[in-house]
Length: 227
Image 1 (cartoon, rainbow, N blue to C red):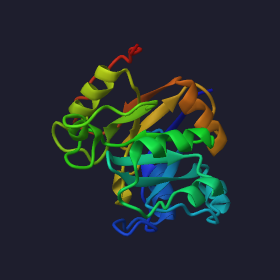
Image 2: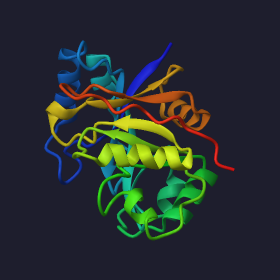
Image 3: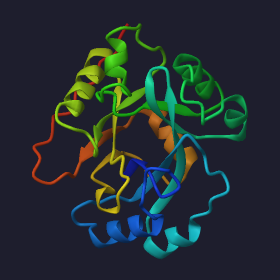
């Protein structure tokens, strides 16, 4: 049983978003034929809302809600899945200059996974940093479909994934209700928890999907192993 998840979204808990979680879920329920998304991951900016409990809304709308984070590093913005107390003690998620290589390695050691997001975006994406600095090690995947991308950004993200053999995810990067679910990731397996999500991201059986209207999707790059 496959699962489609929007792996990148921001509720009103993020300072630049005006979207209540309940409105997101209602929008997806009403538009399930256009955006067949089974769940979303809230990746709030520079924070992790450990105590937030969304079970009542999940039951009401029949849509999975998981929690993660988006942090800022010296190689751009990155999504962090499987956040634990150990991680938030080790790193200040509010720091906008986190050391990317150390962060990726340490989060992996503690059982989580870091995925660079919108890598083709100027200033905050890997593509631009890789032009002047060595590539990062131990990157498992990057976001190649981003619902907020401007012209050319997804293409650069796909080029990066192709060049370095990275696996690929999709996420809406929504800050407004109407944008939720525009891009997502389809997993071969059923995902029902953050532990499932982390395991599947590491396993690699997934692909980005693009539900944006009137847009010819860019063909996903085929990941190749880099020796």
